[in-house]
Image (cartoon, rainbow, N blue to C red):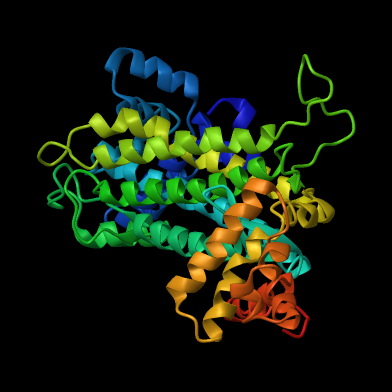
Length: 435
């Protein structure tokens, strides 16, 4: 990931130094496990625990061997004495690489989970604050019926909660290690050593593996990140639409001194939300690569390796950035309540057509007849840009059935508020209001 979109904490997990530090942590855990099995003397374990490496020395060895793990082991070994013979004992490269990768993904998941929690908190607060803030609901981009801005946010809260559950499940699925050797038969490392080493690392040993951890685990993880990114993209796209000049109901923060355009000084563009949409596409495309990586030859090949070196760090870092940025957007979101109310009146009352239809049905009229009557008047109101209610009041088929009090109720936006609070209760959100 380019530095522009890398947050420091996540970047630290995936930089090159950390990449090898995680591998050294794995190597040391295996040595400790061999000690517990009675093979490696405790004095040698202590010496190996002080082992280090130098990136330049890794590069030096790899320039000849063209094998990264072999170069890494050689670079570590030269910081030790005779005890270096215990390094990488019985292991194959993927034992170290895959187990270290699991640790990186777990560490990344913790950051992402915290980001989700922070975002859920601010979205929940917005949902509570605007529980009864009326706004127009849209379907197909067209005015439909009134809803509330808080209810819009409540949809997001529920989705963020599902995101946390998905991420937790995907993280548990990747929280495994393996030290089963070249084709997974434990010919050179007994299962007891594998289990002990994994336990030292806070992992479970894979119940069965060949030369690698199976890539359905990683595909699940990346697909989960892609779904989460899709949710945030959806939220950001809503803000992008609400910020359109013709709508103007919500706007991402526009701080003093911020510029929207290099050529047009008046512009206030939703560029941060658009940035989220762009990065979400990157993560979604990575999910496809992760699925392709599931299909390897026999006990393994390494066609997955080069792709994972890109898609795993980039997906974690991009989602971290997306969640951080969208939380900042929500913290400073400008909400225009007056514009919401004025937009509700744009269609001259058309948004209350269903309420009138149902009122006519309540009088005993068939739904088909009621629909045709209201539809006829609604189309006239739309074409002539006049009040739907005035047309209905002058229509004998309506005025003979509905009095002014009934029409008042049908044309009141408050009827759309009466059950809003139930959704808050279902999500166990305390609003402090009687509903």
